[in-house]
Length: 287
Ligand code: PAF
Image (cartoon, rainbow, N blue to C red; front, side, top):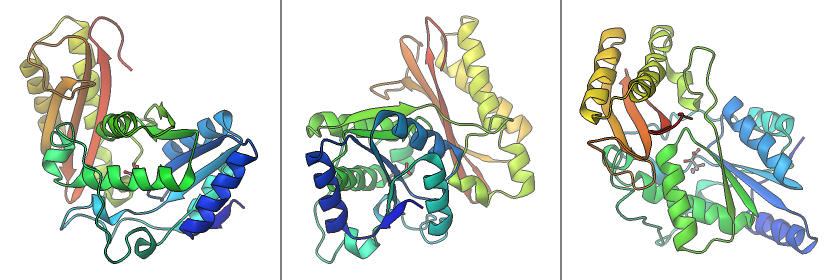
């Protein structure tokens, strides 16, 4: 079994010791309830480092009031088994009180790019994400940290934070892992009813449609977003939160598509909010 460490001081001490021994450390930050998307990150971490740390922490500061913090799925034993299976050496699972003791007051705010898309729908979300990622990087002192492209805006924000605050870490971003029908893997998929699960792949079909439209020369983002919205409304009874065609690095909405695009969307199936995205190179292929 991967060794489980709960104590911040113990984890930091271990990581500093490993560094002194010349070991290369990789960290995979997660909120647990691991799935194959996380396993792909852990495997990639194993290929790039001597020691792999998986952090499992459902971070309260990135959930807004009324969001799913209390019902977010938690199963540490299962996570430890899956992390170990993927090649993790240690699982770091601190308590909320240890991470946010009484009097905690230092937060990391990433300007502008944190206030659009997910940040607009979930005010304060990325302040919580940036703060906890900064803490996890300071605790584990990794050479490499791995994140999934599924949370595209999180990737842009963590990149910005790491660059602006000089964290000495290399970021590796891994492709979204999907079910055979295209649904992006997410711990939140476990909330879906059978009927919602059957409808949810429409999100990836809409993203794929955007890719095809660009490939066939469409450059007006209003048309692309319009067709995506129409497809989703036609095939699923979900509530669309947003459909966006933005510059992949600034996250500014584009009117006339050019360069590298982040096409992203969020929709609610009942009380379950799903997000997904693809990156499209207007002059080449999409990823
Ligand atoms: O992507 C996630 O699971 C979380 O946002 C992260 C990066 C572990 C921070 O809590």
